[in-house]
Image 1 (cartoon, helix red, strand yellow):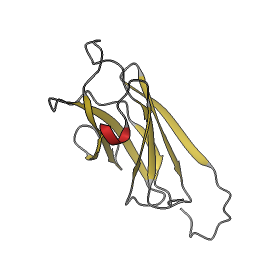
Image 2 (cartoon, rainbow, N blue to C red):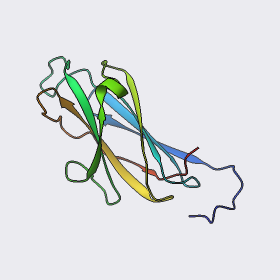
Image 3 (spheres, helix red, strand yellow):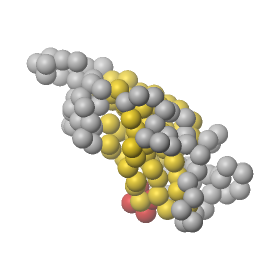
Length: 132
């Protein structure tokens, strides 16, 4: 962690992980920024049983500071109508009110129109950063 007096040049770290077999998301975080973490993933195209995925209504973005966040960690729900629901669409949300420099572990779950969540994605990590 820094005291905030470093020059604006800093190095970011990104992590790419798979959500099921067909989806990936990227976490980008910079240690010298405060309070947010961007989560980017590609929406899934199929259900766990291989059938076409057509009824996603929301996504849950699980996060915590101690490893595997899903399915028992805190989560934020994002409406698919706002974030996006088309298969293979790149989706992005921002987690806020995070601690600068703290490592957060994140996983994504899709929720269908019946309220049934998908399996948790693989977990990725990134550091909380200051908003731009």
